[in-house]
Length: 213
Ligand SMILES: C[S@@+](CC[C@H](N)C(=O)[O-])C[C@H]1O[C@@H](n2cnc3c(N)ncnc32)[C@H](O)[C@@H]1O
Image (cartoon, rainbow, N blue to C red; front, side, top):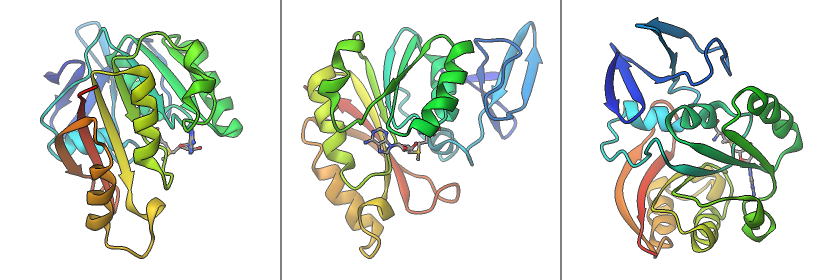
């Protein structure tokens, strides 16, 4: 395994994170053992962050001592890899069904803290969350930029990543126009890079951002 970013490893075409909870897998991913460590293969078909890495993301902004606010945690696939890389992951999810799976994941992966709430209303969960260094957002909703702006204003992260799904915003408009319009709304952020997620996810980008405050 060769380390390509803090906490992210590559072997051949595969990428992986070092498993913080040995013997445990989250979504049936393969484990590779090497020199007493376990590495969980990170599937770009199942995770937009893995897809962005495979598609050439260059600016790695998640550090091992960072607390991450993860908006749209679903059943915990990508959050589990982010939690392998970082200190704590506050995982916000609106769906009770997804939350049930996420709670099961967090019972073993104790650095994931599940939060059942709407990411549109950060004031309802701000009291339960410690300091935040990084926001990762993947909510597939029409108002994606607004959600990130609201959370950033409250939690003041150093960096963020936003997955934008064009079809969640407008099914008829040209995706590149939608991405441009959404990114223009992120006034308090500097755009570090924009990574297209094709062929893993059609009409999606991952925007890598620095918060200017
Ligand atoms: C594309 S999935 C996220 C997949 C996940 N990021 C991963 O890679 O493992 C989007 C999730 O956002 C959740 N969601 C949608 N609107 C939300 C909101 N307002 N607040 C929190 N979660 C929301 C959905 O229930 C869904 O689980």
